[in-house]
Amino acid sequence: MKPLEAFQYLLEHDQPIILTFPFEEEKGHVITGTGVCHIEKIKGGSKITLFRFNPKRLIYHLKKSRSFHANFEIKGETYFCAVEGLTVSGSAIIVDIPISLNTSFRRFLRIEPSLRSPVILHVYTPQDGTVSFPVKDITEEGLSFIARSQIALENTFMCGLQIPIDSGLVIFSNATVVYKIGFAGTDKEAKKPDVLNEDILYGLALFPHTKDVEKLRSYIVNRNLEIKKKIREGVQRKK
Image 1 (cartoon, helix red, strand yellow):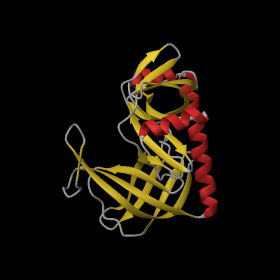
Image 2 (tube, helix red, strand yellow):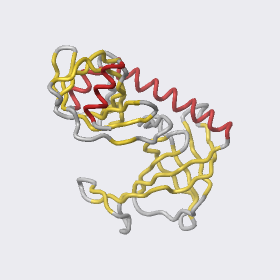
Image 3 (cartoon, helix red, strand yellow):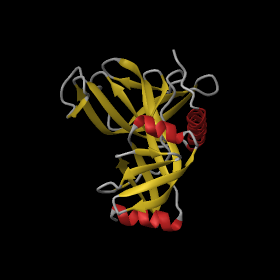
Image 4 (cartoon, helix red, strand yellow):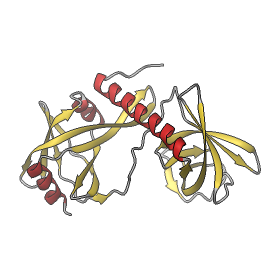
């Protein structure tokens, strides 16, 4: 589906757009913030005007970030795109219509843990025994974390997740590595993870017990509500 066609459909059916943007929760700790808006009008086939922002302070955060991602659903398909060329006009925002759209297959809500109340991943390795990492982001079915160098992990392995509920609840789950991306240099350029002593972003698929899924889901939902409250109130705690 072409971007202009998609936005015309959203306008005609008054369907919402979910916006995601960088939000500094703590000083130096940037997470993904979310909000909702609608299309007010399309201008000349090249720009759209967004309004009815929820929460109302969303427009302040978007103005500060200068760019964001838009996610929306049309006839059962989910699409996302990067949005740029942002101009604030009163209680509305005018943006450029993107060149293309991407299809999203994400099924579950993904959130980033708090810096002060992290989720900790514990895994066993043959070389170093148990090693632990703060989780970068997490869903009901997967997570990502950053290691300072490559770690030896079996195709399928057991891991422990320490979640900041019930005084540090620990959930055990089978897991498998679905991707790993190496980073090097001050600009964190992505590269193949074939060099030792570099940062590696790992993505894991999780297979927790159904009862543990409920606990994990409870944490994710409550954390999402916490983030939304901070966006709504515009509160950024300082160290």
